[in-house]
Image (cartoon, rainbow, N blue to C red; front, side):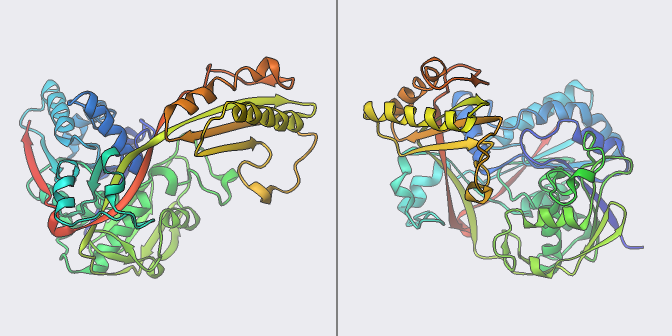
Length: 455
């Protein structure tokens, strides 16, 4: 009989449904619990937290989740892969170790951390050595924004996670690894796949891509037939049933809400795909045009035919830097003449800002309920629309003009067009803009490290 492992998705981003991991454990047999927390902007948020407190910089939600689950994890020998470590995997792991000891699990859990992705302390050294970290979108060298850089993390692959599992880790906590690596690594470890068996590695990568966003592939945020997707109040998060030969099934626990269908899986495959023939990861390059999907049963989609090739000699580096400031203000105008009122309020606001001689990099107006989502495709607006939200946003390199803008929204309630409603929360907040800077670095410059912590 072909060996099969079940890898369950428990989190698809930092802030995902906190009940999902527990429900994955309660719903039926699984071998691994994969928990994905990191988006590009998440690293800069965590870096800010760590700069204020050296004990922070990771997904704090992960620690109480592990406390609530760890006894069952030990009893059922379910292993966890999670990138909850953010920019401080050691602090995250130390907090989990403390929980395990408090729960009386000393000697029963093995926790590993994966580090080596953080490039911040080496940036100047690498720049001096000739690595320009050219922006993949604009071609600009990183030196143009070096002074404002907040975080810089290379995307590690599955290798160090496989090493941690091979060394007996029950919970593997990483910093910035590819989302797909969290699912691919258990397959490589369990099946002993060769690192040059590109098609199997590509299949595992595709599996990881399908479940990296949690319930987005099992009915959540699904466009096709969305009104008939059952019981989204209790969605079943996805599970990969992976086979040694590289084929796998996407499914969920019986009796849970949502739906696993060819349509739901296809929508997730299209997410952040880029060139469908070359989905590049540190482990391989997967050809998404080779993927074959089949509805093999209710809530079961079989995936096969995946082919792949060798990876490049580079790793992607996710860099964030301060760009300036922004603020967004909103007012809701009610019928009659809601649209006319909103447009008039916008023109009044712009005239007042013009007289103040403020310099903005951008001043953007959206009429929510009219054309904010689809723009000109929305067609002619309904002149008798019952309500319109006027949403105005500004951004600037300096804080002062943005701060001044925030003082000009509220007065419109009484000195602008009538019928304002829905204004709450006081003056809009000035927020710092964190910009994203994607770049590449040769793999030889990045050394992943695995550390085992005893409970």
